[in-house]
Structure formats: C-alpha cells, structure tokens
Image (cartoon, helix red, strand yellow):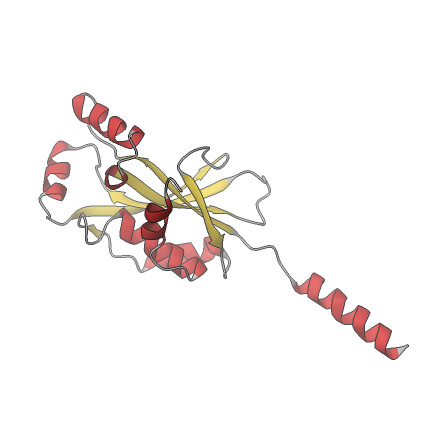
Length: 172
C-alpha cells in the first residue's frame, strides 16, 4: 500500500512540477531599403531565397501567453535601416549604430519561420537579459542580425550556429 502511494505521489509531483517550455523560432524578412529600386531589389532577393540578403530574427512563443497565438520578436538592426548612407557604410565594412528591437506579433509568420527548439529558461526574461549585454555597434558579417540570432538562440536553447544548420537543410 505504501509503494502505491509513493508511486502516485511521485507521478503527481512530476506533472505538477513541470512547466510548459517557451518555443523558440527563427524568422527571416527582406532587408529594408529606401523606397524605389533598392527596395525592389531587396524584395526580389528575398523572394528568390538568396540567404545572405535576408534579415534574421528570433521569435519566442511564450508558454504562458494569455493570447495563445501571440509571439514576441527580438532582432538587431541598424538604427536607420532605410538610410542610403547607413547602407553604404555598412556594406563597406564600417561600424554603424544599431539597436535591439523587441515587438509583439499577433501570430507566427506563415513563411520563412523555423522552429528551432524550446528554451531552457523563461525565454522572454532570458532574451531581455541577453539584450542588456549585447554590443550595439553593427558591422555586417562580424556583428549583425545573424550573429545576434545565433547568439540568442544558443543562449535560450543551447543550439549553436542555428542559421548555418537551417541554411544547409533549406530545401531538404
């Protein structure tokens, strides 16, 4: 009789003590550019799946969200992404001012959005802590949205180089 009570007691503890874990996704959108020809080129590159001409971000679907479909987006981008002089400076390898942006979306994007895992931590709190320490000088290819996305995903899930993994497996 004692054995049955112990088994039921431990089963109850494991289900009560467990919490649903926040889901972590990576999303991609076209790079932003000034209206006109530059914007058309960026949109065409995105549509053609040119991996290097996309802006990457981390999307968190909190398990505790009052609106079950609502998600939070975390990304790193230039302070003025549509300014042609900022774009030229960035493309020439110079550091430009960047910032970390957090915003809400009503639901997950339907395309260019990949599930990468569940967070080991409270994902929103952890992402905010990660952002406090993120250096905001942006330098294309060295410290940009890709580095931010890889770093935040690793911090939340333990998975390294997630963008490289997604790129290799895209289309499979």
